Length: 209
Image 1 (cartoon, rainbow, N blue to C red):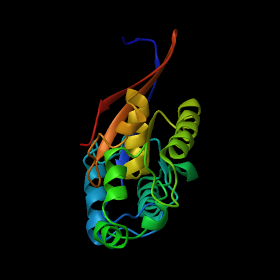
Image 2 (cartoon, one colour):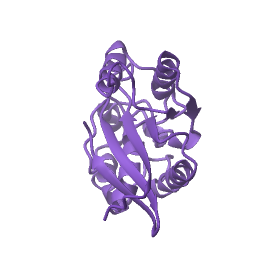
Image 3 (cartoon, rainbow, N blue to C red):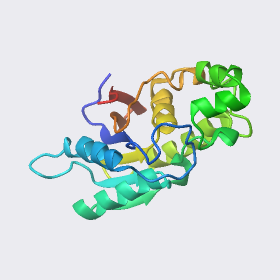
């Protein structure tokens, strides 16, 4: 149900581009974007321009370099305020941080890793953050953003688990389905949030463009 008198906030979720080092279990390991990664996110965002102008009023970013550096550059280029949100940092992967899947399989076998990807709500990385704790910090930061948005159209620059986790909350899927959306590097998803006479409503307009 749509409300014609609703106050609307649009939030675009951008997954960062490819980091230096390529694909690995990076988590909170703080690698910068590769040249390819910079090109990926630049192209993705520039596709949102209209007559050379971005539609955004503000940018919110993870504190990790692969998100923050691009967000700060974009803010400077287009004169947009940039806010760093610590709770939009990626899921901490414990002993798996900074390793490839092959390295983890060689050190620990395949059982725990396979179980994690099948149901990350039931199995956590050894020494890592539980999905329940991760989901709670995302929920708090998301509600703060919706309650006090820095503009009517906001770009959030974040990570695979973060973007998936926020989309999961909006569409109210089970926590075990946190990776149901296959978001490649530089994918953009759009969420609309309405404040209206009957309360508040969030819905996903599109995922992973």
